[in-house]
Length: 299
Image (cartoon, rainbow, N blue to C red; front, top):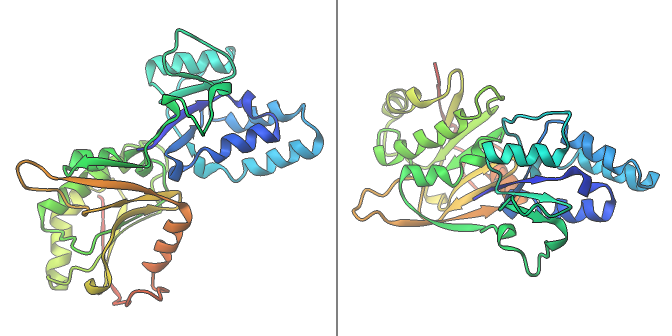
């Protein structure tokens, strides 16, 4: 659901264009700016150096607030070459959704000229769906959120019916955890929680099922906390993070039927996710805090 765009830092050298592009990116927009290369922000500052002092300072200050719009990737970059040449070379190895540049490069099929981007009549490559219909299989469920899970520091799963001993729940969770682990050497999340209302199992059995069916799939030394609430107060199913999130219309469990059913997954605003994170916390004023917390950690 999230599309990675390589955005030429030279396009961000004045406040008007900087503000336009930043407004088009973020999890809720379905677009993320590739941090290509790691010094991308420094390259924007260099491009903005020719702007007036006030304009330059506005851009520099705003750069500190756009991390939620950016995506970290593994890449190759040759400093002796221009940004656009590096982007085109990288695109042949690990394709971006699109490259946004200031000029035309007809040989690059997924290149967008900045002057062609009109939000009222967007080019095909600029159109990114904010909701998708997927099959309720672990692979497709994880695939639509893998990009998000690979980037965030705080991740909260919410499903009132999660059962750690049920394959229909643990198989999707296994794939979600694999997406988290795929970040490789980059820092793992500082917080991973699963919030449920399932009180069908006693606490000892619930913990035992977590140890048996969930722990083997956790990345090394990464902990998962499972919090149980009053099921009657829960309804919607979400994956929320500090950068945005998604709502699953049906649930975070796979469909065991044949043929497999479908679900609609919708992107959420950062503010909505912040509110949900507060709702599912000991300080919640919307849900009854039961103080039932289970923890399992990868070996």
